Image (tube, rainbow, N blue to C red; front, side, top):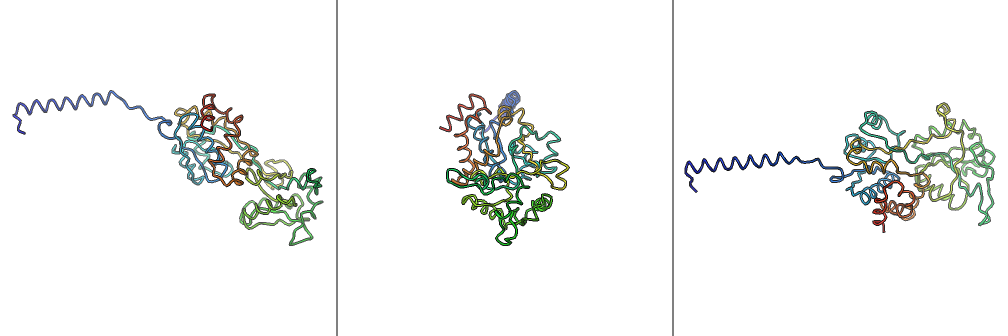
Length: 340
């Protein structure tokens, strides 16, 4: 189509004014940054079951109680902490702080990561014995075999009860698997508590071998004294008693002459959540999980061969009296309605 010089001029002016008008409108309508709720609340799932379950519990509450889109990211602790410090992971519910170095403490010190809570405060490790061996079972007509066994110092008088099948002149204490550094703590303890006179420290080939030995003895009500830790499914499924040791002190721990210290397990958020998602930050501040309860949850997972999300739903359905205290009344009603 042919335009005269005059018409071309008017057309150019018209197009220029139209473009200018669109630019003015665009500039006047400033785009607001998206909130976390509109985008995604990212939660570290980590690689171990208790962390996976806690992540699923929180994600379900955040999604169905408060309307957030949630994404659970599972990676090694190092990668998770790096992403967390950058803000690519918003929440991490289980930080076993004694296991970490600068990758955790530097962003906490700088304020990029904020510790909002501690959970699993009653985590522990040490020597365990099936409770039935100590207390018996009146209903089943089983008499206690070691009625006075309370602490590691009581073990020598019962060494024959825990006889080592490969060395009948001594008892057997199951330590950590052969390759674990935990044995560098258990070996000095054998000397410090004068157990080496009456016991051998047996090192199983793997954690599965250790768990199998304990489970087998507990199932049959037979004696065993073995190193273990919690929270774990095994201590949720079987009634075990932890033997007392001298209370932990920093001084005694230098020579491993006392009980294991409990680890400090924190809940952390990236700092931006204080402004972008203050409602779920409050949930995390109230989030409560004990080792006995997690033992129970992990035992449910083991017995029913289910995933972390199934265990989280089982927990939420059966523990409303606990989790409803973490959330608003409205959120509690929404979560309950969804669970039904």
